Length: 206
Image: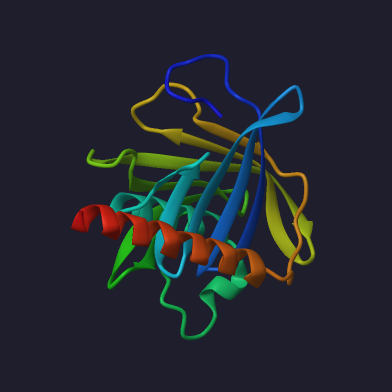
């Protein structure tokens, strides 16, 4: 991961737990020579997003929107995301391109997905980069697809912002498992978000 313009990029480990198309929790560790130096929680639970870096948590509309897009950047290639009654929709807009319309709060958000060789190769969407700033084009590139537990999974994901010349994040996917128990971790983060929301309300009243 690259933080701002500071080189070199920081190595990290991430474990992502998801309920497809509904919630996710990313537990991230920034590491130095294999030792964790900073822990981060990036999540979307109960329709709300949170980014917690060390003891500091950031919540709000911009975080909600960005986290919702990340949710669908991982979920859209899972067949169950398009099950009957799903609120996500796909529209063909080119020979190798679709437009995704995904639920977000009481409305929706949109992303464009391009395909190469029958697999998704890039998802692009307008996403908030910072609280208080306008949306910027955000891209997720997928490569080296393999079949695991009956689901096609990319072995590499690269994330970038349109206004930056270098990658923001690069992931090598080490493992994938379907039908795992996600509820305990999602519930823990839901409680964490309620706690931080309560603190924000107290500061606002004060």
